[in-house]
Image 1 (cartoon, rainbow, N blue to C red):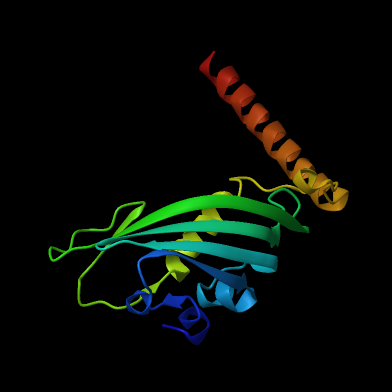
Image 2: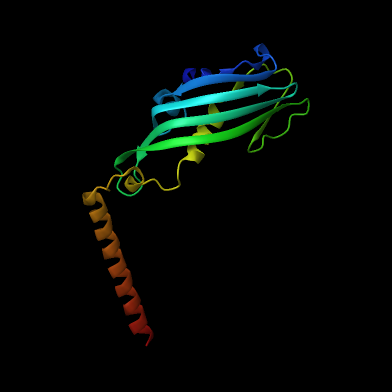
Length: 170
């Protein structure tokens, strides 16, 4: 595991039962560890870790901005994130396959690294399509104009091919 991700280790054996709060600043090293093109801008995680006897409840509260490229014109944009996600951890002798919101751990384990679920929660909090208009910007007209020109040429070529095919059938 890379050094930037070790900061997201929580040694739960040192915690008493009940609720514990952790604060994390998510920086660009975090995203680089996952080989992601995303970057962080004042992205913070408040984590509520509630320890029971054989279960833990982790509530991830994310707030800040993630920098990425517009899907339309590739201009850099900074999208706000404000999400809340829940993850359960169950301690069991019979190790089962993890589910979407449940992680299974053996009783011999003493710590959990929350980096992977955190990264997943950041990704699912982003919209499928991210565009400049989502942050009050206008797409770069030079780029969108080139795309429109290419699409128009391809459409005209396809229309001409269909017309030729239709004439040949007659």
